[in-house]
Image 1 (cartoon, rainbow, N blue to C red):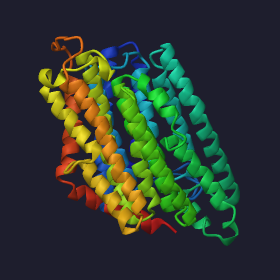
Image 2 (image 1 turned 45 degrees about the vertical axis):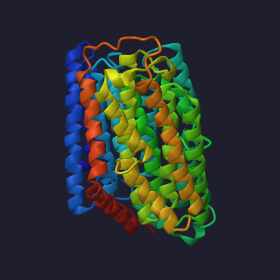
Image 3 (image 1 turned 180 degrees about the vertical axis):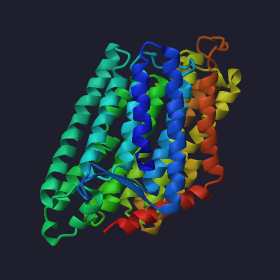
Length: 484
């Protein structure tokens, strides 16, 4: 039953926290304990999958491929693990006083509902159920966006809903067309059905429609407007959770569909995806360079970093897939930590606007060090985790003689450095514009602990990359073996 752990553990926790709606302290305790149990289950899942390659369970009382199948391989187990780690960090941070979300009775059920949908999306082995979990993610995300009830949050929720509904309709239409053509929804059955000669003309069109839906959900160019228009209204822990995870689920789905289920897609798919990746990188990093609000800067960097992940998918090789997986893990940790650090900056210096804060280097040198760890990792400076992720991707682009793709990826790193330097100079190096005394703030210990946890994992990935590189290479090889 380990394959069901990513769904059942957070789902049960969501139910228990909902039942404790009148007992705030008990609700917070159960929420954190549930997240820790989710993490333990994720570790057990990774260990078991590493031992047997793949575990699966079929529900519904029907034989495969008609049963509802949940399956975990190295790829999905790794994504479940990073989801659980981020869940623990975010709930630790929420317990502190660094821009936490309002502690209403619905907050923790929504957070664990989101974790359940994300975890289930990683282990589902059925195209329609993948759609279901995407929509449950959308519902939970909308609840978190509108959670504060302020006009700006309701406006953000509406923008998020309006643009994501387009992706929902595309996704559902693609699922219906693929099912109508193949008669199958199970991933393994679809892999076999996709090889039928009579589907050679129509199926690539349906798969392209499906890929378009995933690109919108991932925030790729030119479909990313919903992301910077909505994310900046979120409190720090919820922003770290959604900013770290949600777009990566779209990338995972794209990798699963194009790398395994419909692995024999036309070369034009991957060629187009490569150029979309470059445009996503460039537009995202330019948007980040333009803004002064910390949350908007980091939201645009989500878009930019999605470009690197799309680049790895476009390379359509085991090495490209391995680079995508490594970069995904690095980016979730580094980006989520930057959002959490931004929350600490806000509570210590008084604002998210870089023009209205400063003096943090002298007042909080420890926070400056933690920011530099995450920032250098995002840039890809050696020997950070971002360096190894970008090295795997850029090396493969050059190996395939995609010199423009690799060159743009390197150039975007320089523009990312500009954004991180702007944050450093404005928030940490220059004096506070109001000559404000940055006095200690009570209740920040849980937030510091969460940031330290993610910083430690980021450092470990950078300083000891070999075990993870071997793991993602084996995950990519397993994905290649199951492709047609």
